Image (cartoon, rainbow, N blue to C red; front, side, top):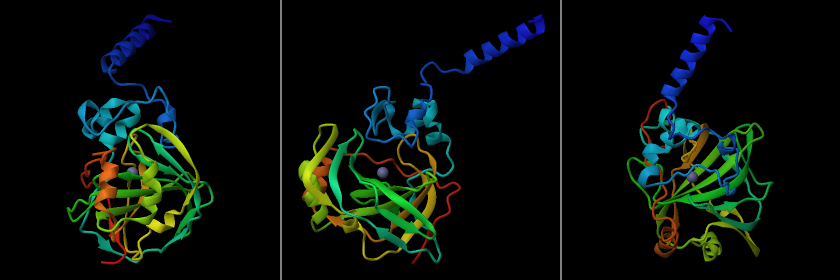
Length: 268
Ligand SMILES: [Zn+2]
């Protein structure tokens, strides 16, 4: 190695040293969106909804999470000033699934067996899981609802489509009556014998929805997520909302600035 090359190498090393923040954890590929949220990986980067790992700091917690702070189409958002547009119907083909519940430390998630799909335009996505947030993550014209349901789908090209349904307080919901008896503070996965559910029971009758391209609302905040948020909320009883909030009092990312999002609504 000649002297110039040696100096160049030394300079590069110095530059790297100066810019590597020892606090920031290297990006481990297993934390990407592909990873099942059910895994309890010891090396998992800790993030939270309050304290030092709160949403405003997610982007600083790991190199994997930089999109949380640098992204241009982050979710959730306030849904307003949407452009009315003719939209494709969401065609649900949901089957019954055995009840498997995961408390993953961030939410209560229900895992879905393969074979249930939603078709949007010419694309078919498979339902992987659904989970809940309190309060709602999306707001409609600034209004926050007590909770929000996310039905997470993926297609063969690993594109993600999330159907969001806002939850308001009113009547008790029959499908929640089947799930809630088995939820608890204890983290981990539980398979409930002899109980099946069908997520079709969540889908509102009125199918008008807001559509936009955003992100996962949890780290790593991956963008390119197709969001379909129903205009019509569904109802849970005060008791059902309370039961969830005894486990997760607050697990909603605040609304993100509207940047390069284009929001359309299928019916005003
Ligand atoms: Zn969610």
